[in-house]
Image (cartoon, rainbow, N blue to C red; front, top):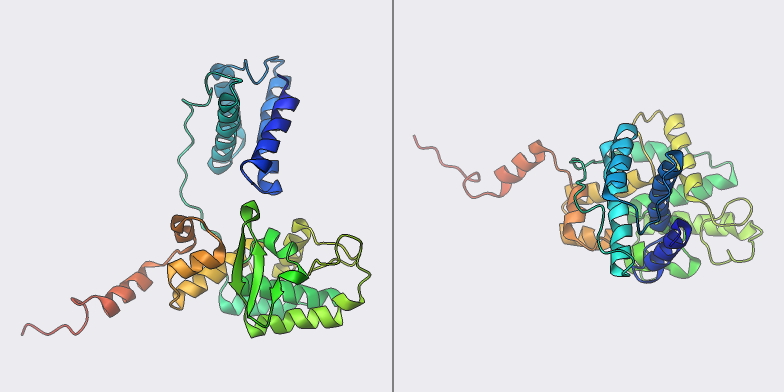
Length: 305
């Protein structure tokens, strides 16, 4: 079995049987390509079926010198999945990754924007350009609905249920969920639709896409990243931010204002509540305030004197 055939089959397996997104599949394939380049650089002619544990270990040692522990852990996880697939399909009898452990990494929490910082970023948008109305509507949607960037750029006109106060979001694995949307956000999306989108020459295949570029096609993830990075510089926001920062801020602000974790989980589209908890970093002073307010031994304390 050649590497190219094995990787193609694995990608089809991830797409069809696992239902993973194209972005996730591309990441897995990219990590396998790193292994292939290593084999080529060291003139190691071993197929996916015959590659040894020793060769894999040497590759991982090399990776550890080049990338951060988090990236190293992702590569190891991806390779384990690939070789598990080969074992499952009876191409191999063993997984050469079985004895290789991932580096220990802590939970990495992205920066959170305050409400004031979000207001400043949105106020910085130049509304004299048609793209300004689009960008304002996009940022309002990211923050108000907690969307991933992939969910934002694939949002369809047919996904908007404004009369009911919801939008339909297609998340990871093509799983759909309904997310509530406020009148505030509906207003800016409607302005964009009526004043900008209606005047764009929409290209074939994109007639149902909500947010379009100037050429009438769906925006790319990279373009949304660039828009936000440029706004941050212009607004003087020093934090390292991305589209995901708005999603994290959405969840954090909901929690701080009293929303329950289960509702936040549903709106974010997390299968597990433990995933949602990663977003919910609460500082110790807030925990102390919760204790003082709600624990019976802290409330209405009587003096012993």
